[in-house]
Length: 455
Length: 76
Image (cartoon, rainbow over all chains, first blue to last red; front, side):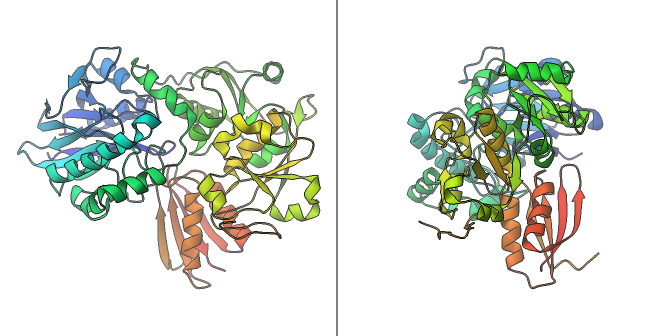
């Protein structure tokens, strides 16, 4: 049997994990914390895992690597220079692992992190069939170099250029490329649009392979967008050898219990859709719809150490949110509540938020409202409402004091997704919010008194 | 099933990019032509029908494949 690579997608983080196998033995690359998905693949193909390997100490998720390797009694492999608090096999550049008919060669590729490894996969004949590139060579882009800290960014960006060049020089053109990041992940410098690639294909369009080093560095550094604040908690968690995802639901809370906790300032995350939420919710709850961006956006808004309460309209949604949040270490759930339609009607803490579109602004005078644009800076600069105050979504918690008080705040983003979360955050902060559930895509200039891009 | 004039694969893109790319693709079509959109962003299930509705383009079909979502939109 030839060597197979099974991809396990995690769209909510824009990441991929992999199981490489020869039909009998398997190597797992960069598993997420919910290792039940890996176990399903192993079971389906009847595989015996010899090694679990990490390309780097991850910054965007809690690893399942330690838990998986421990459970299966497999070797857990990281760069020997990664300082971790558990036993593992420390790898150096050029080390080769044997797994059945497969060979896996470690390739030092610093850039995304200083100790990043890629892994070249070889078959029994010594052909290089694939390369697991983690956060180095991505599809048409590279892993971002700024997650370790601003003092390291330029050095890592330069290293990244040479690492991607090294992969291109040393690995066979026909080898398939299997990155961990780049599928909507904030670990990617830009968003990848390809679904598969080879080393040869990347030679034609990867910026590190078609641009000069100077040009590459300029574009990479200039193009960096904000990343979620929860990222800074991931590496410290990962060097401790985190436990696997626990799917056991937290305690079922009733309305009184949730309300009492809200009065004490607890963080309640209400997963219902924005129409249902804004028609009736409990004051203080944060509305985060069950979308792919849930972990990223919640990780920006809710302090990492908090013990959350989840509210949703059915158990499936609550289960899925628990899984998504656990992947980024938000596993301190104190309870959950299934909210039937009308669950909060008449309650002392019940609130509503008006949901409008941009046309609704015509009905209120400029001195009767504040308009808040919570998009990223590049989006705002491409065109915006003339009267908009701009506070990027991720800066809202620390800049909430800048939002004028005393009149309704009309909030918008590109699609309504970020504005929905932000509106509930404003209500929690004691402001009056109006949600503009409308589109303002890059280049759009909403409102009558619009200004063109660049103003 | 209507004739699909163009398919846009927005897999792997995060909000708001699936909608942004959908708009770009629709802009290139003639009135009455049909665009197929593929997305892996669950938010697209909400955003793409809403965007079609707000722009007058007709959503012919929306499919929830669990982790892969497809849409057919007829340009107004």
